[in-house]
Image (cartoon, rainbow, N blue to C red; front, side, top):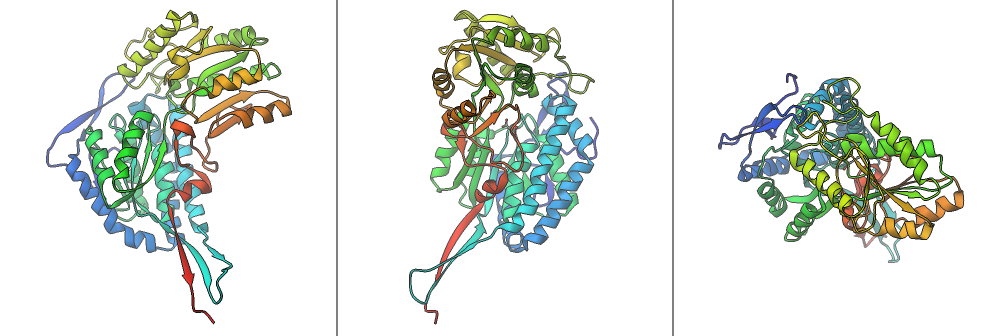
Length: 482
Ligand code: SIN
């Protein structure tokens, strides 16, 4: 692979940094199994250097006017957009998603840098009428300080920009640990930040395979004041516990188990097209993608047959090839999880409607799958499958489908299709989720708060609410005024 934005080491204090250990790890192309690059494997103890660099950079970055920060971030945004094709090619090769999806991710990711660069200028405080004579109450907003970010492989670019966009705009400095499966998109962002004039130490990227100990250093550090993580609920819980010792702020974007409900009055064609996007984009490896399809009994057969017609036409292959809709899963382990969910469901009476097995292309390619007769006790109803499998559950009445949809420890995203306004109102009020999409399959945008309830997480990303997560409030009582 060649690109002027390919790098193979961590980026610390404005320099490309090789750990003394001189160990390297392979970055594989999941489409071919070939080695794309060998990246320096940082020692967990070297992560301290990145934290210290971020600490040194904090006073000047946080004191800069928001307008100055905004103009540097604007340049960063423009460079990402100018190089979107090149960044998309890197992303597809290390992650597997089709090139068009990768380009959408790059543009979506860049939107956070753009949006927060503007919103950073509007970090207004307050003056509160004081109940105490001759005094004034001032509320100021200030950046939390050095922030650490642990980001996933399923959106290797946008999950970084969504976090650093808000942090940088608020005046915070950053240490990012990208997933070791997909470090190249992260390093390309660092190269672009450097070119954009982001001062040294404001954005540091540490690449390594010892995620457990790197995470530990970030969580234990007294310098790091906030940790933000996107990934599994199990790892999120560990980080949450580790951050307790230093009482850090924490944001967690964790697993989902999204219901996708189709009511009998829904526009069925729109629901089927929506299901394809919502389920199969990124081969189903998206926290917000539909995991359980609840279809009203009156339209169940029709929906299943229309969905199967479309699924049969989906092209599986290398994301770089023209016309490919579904790339490989990230690793053979991911494929085994998908297979185990299907086998468990079939063993409990589910019916195979489409797919159900590895694809003839071999490797970690899996056929897009539909299962009928899905039931509540199956693994697929309880856990996030993170693969291209749509289990269809039949339902009769609203209260029961709401009960089933909410019967999970997760609460990230939910989708439903219906026309009746009173029904729509009842259903979105009844869904215990941080995000609900009605008659549309994609809800992610930089202007809205992304995040979940229950064990799907803490905090919000994107929008003005996302900026709040990087802010400390200081209340000043000015007394003795005449
Ligand atoms: C995720 O899967 O974590 C993010 C998906 C999105 O932003 O749409």
